[in-house]
Image (tube, rainbow, N blue to C red; front, side):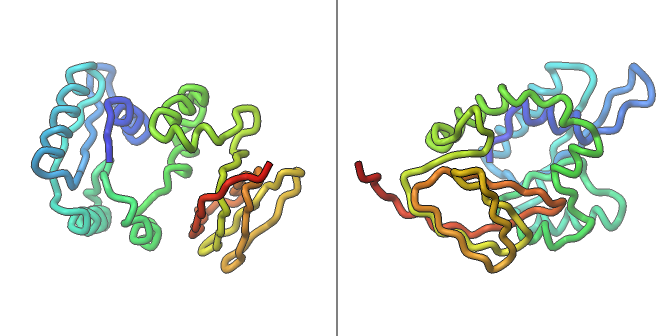
Amino acid sequence: MTITRRALLSAAGALAAAPSRATEKTRITLWHAMGATPGEEITKLIAAFNASQDQVEVTGLFKGVYKDLLTSVAAGWRAGQAPHIAQVFEVGTQTMLSSGPVIKPVWQLAQETGVTNTIDPVAGFQEFAEHVPDLAAAMEPDNPGMHRTQTVDYGIILEGEVWAELDDGKQVHLKPHDVIIQNGTRHAWRNKGDKPVKIAFVLIGAQKKN
């Protein structure tokens, strides 16, 4: 997982409480699972971020491997001593979703803090394109979320509810255990609910007939 200076700044702005006095720094605690060389790089990023401004100070702390980190976060939350930021891995998603109030989804945090009002969608898409250029190229800028790939997609809804928007504008409401197949067609996913959705996908490469 790559943590950039921008990511630290965004997280600090979203998660930190406002300082009580204008001269007081906002202090952010970051727990991570990066040892050895990756840990050294995180330390450098934190130091560079702290030196770049005088409003926020980030303190990084190595908490062992990912499993140990997740356990520490849950224990810290119950003791009222949870970190502001915890860097975890995508395999731990189910553990986090099953942790109840220990974990607060980013979308919920964004709503509560109002950070969504400060997000630049154009800059966000540009950064998205830098990291996953092939997927970004399949997206339609004028139709957010709408995309087409040269694949046959098999999707199984595991948790939550989602609406699949099809090429003709029709939206199909999908629930757990529903299966959807996209044969290289235009589509988009719309989560109209207030809970995350988990979908298992199998994508098989294909070629479009002329």
